[in-house]
Length: 482
Image (cartoon, rainbow, N blue to C red; front, side, top):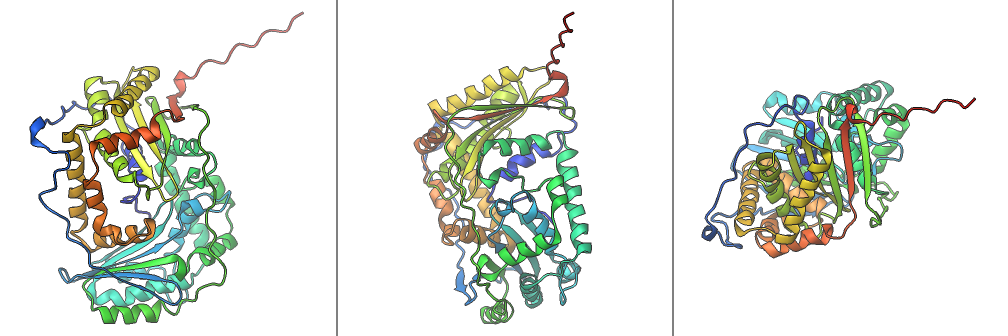
């Protein structure tokens, strides 16, 4: 059930970079030179020629605490429904990593009134779609259906919020599905464990260090009673946000929402929240690991970063795009195209609600030294910190974000995702209409300053992931003296 295209989390984009198609690495593809723009063609804060139309949303809070956001839009005869639960992989119980993700699967198993195939019958069988994803801070369930199916979809979402048919059979079945997903995405991929180890070793105490997909050992140790407790703890109306966007009549939609979701009781117990505070790093750390699956060495360098709600977040997002946004990005041009020291090079600003990571990664080209590659990567980061960015680079990055926003607004599901992200992750629904303006207002000096704030004189974690053949031979044991 998992959907890994989570717009608000750049971490998953970084994961996809290393978890897709890397098993057959060979020599680099023919390099592509960067496109050039005349120096006088771009002004640093030039306004885009087009703008993103605002979303005129309505908001209501039900007596049981459910937040409801809606956007009436009759441009297509469809409606998107999303339920955002404020529970993610950071809320996994201790020694139970992957629980939120496992539970995402369990939410499709139905209850006494909802058959296990109900969501497929209510969506795919009538030309719609349904899916879900688990991120660090949230779990989201979403559907797109013809307008006349809004009523049953709202009923079904309220049903699985109120109760689930959790038994040993479907629990073990879905646990096996998640374990197989782990084997395919992590164990079968030469760099799957590299990505997990990078995140694990970059946090000292915060539960962001735990893998969202879990581990086979901890999944095997999980119990049905723990799954039931997880549902009652986090799947409740006062921990959820409903977003409805599309072709509906407001009065009718509101009546259905109150009828179905309003009947779900709000538990008396408080919702537990993560309180762990990640300490500042006091020293650099280096981890070297060897794997028989790795065809070429890989390197990651991480720095602690702020929350996605930080004022620096837009500047860091632009830095991310300039350093790593496609084949014309700085790291690709310098390390893959010009120096040919790496096959792949990336930088990611992975910001979540509590804090985040700034991560630079390389997969080396054949025959290249890890030490030389790390030196070259650091040189590019230092150049960014010292020289900043050009007006052309900044304008190009801003235009790419504008393009993404325009594409997002083309569908009801995209609009719902943007509104849910603003309301739940950022705690400000109005952000859906002003986030692009804030990003467009960022200057080159602000991008440089933000990067220096989190990288210059800050402690870093370096992870080297090397082929088993590079492992030093164990020292010979001395013979016993006679």
